[in-house]
Amino acid sequence: GAGVSQSPSNKVTEKGKDVELRCDPISGHTALYWYRQSLGQGLEFLIYFQGNSAPDKSGLPSDRFSAERTGGSVSTLTIQRTQQEDSAVYLCASTPRGRDRRYFGPGTRLTVL
Amino acid sequence: GESVGLHLPTLSVQEGDNSIINCAYSNSASDYFIWYKQESGKGPQFIIDIRSNMDKRQGQRVTVLLNKTVKHLSLQIAATQPGDSAVYFCAENGGSQGNLIFGKGTKLSVKP
Image 1 (tube, chains in turn brown, purple):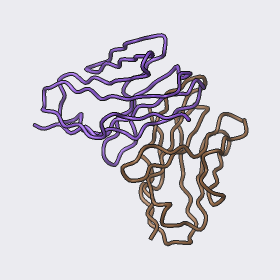
Image 2 (cartoon, rainbow over the protein chains, first blue to last red; image 1 turned 90 degrees about the vertical axis):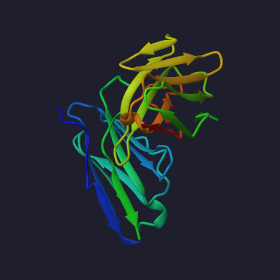
Image 3 (cartoon, each protein chain N blue to C red; image 1 turned 135 degrees about the vertical axis):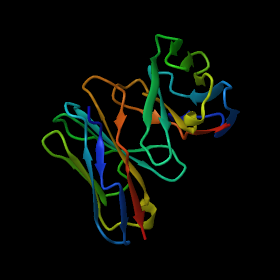
Image 4 (tube, one colour; image 1 turned 60 degrees about the vertical axis):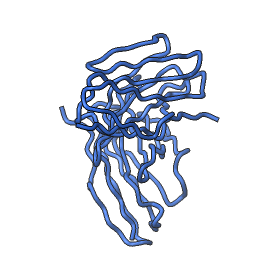
């Protein structure tokens, strides 16, 4: 079946611009996660959606970062007024209800010039 | 605080040899552990997982060992192949279902 998809695969933007990153989770998965991975680093948790519950935003690094999940499916991560330190690979993952294993998408590589 | 770390940031092995990637965790409440493989330019791919009620779990060419006494996790890859070259991440759940804390990763290089 189809896995987690993310778009765009690559995004180059200028400092100060806003960007939107999209994630399509696996159909039926109730949980959706966003992570950030800087070059050569591990995965930094950003935000977590579980069903209709309020999202866990504890990992968002600043108020320039926000995310939505519409209809319990597609999610958009928005970064406002991008900074060079926002350059990283942004990974999305989804999980079936009651399970721990994450299913990751291919990521979006964001480059802020 | 919670932490998941790796003893070796890089590992180079000869094709056909066995590989062992180690991981230390600090949260004794963690009851679920998982290994991911990440190839260049791709998202992490599930390899194998284990719950704390087990000491060992085997998959195809991979084995995960869990030593709760010393809070140590290892991934063993038998007959390592060039296609195994990747960064390997371990993660623990800190005792909370739905939570995963990832380590920094170990880069495995397989020499032909």
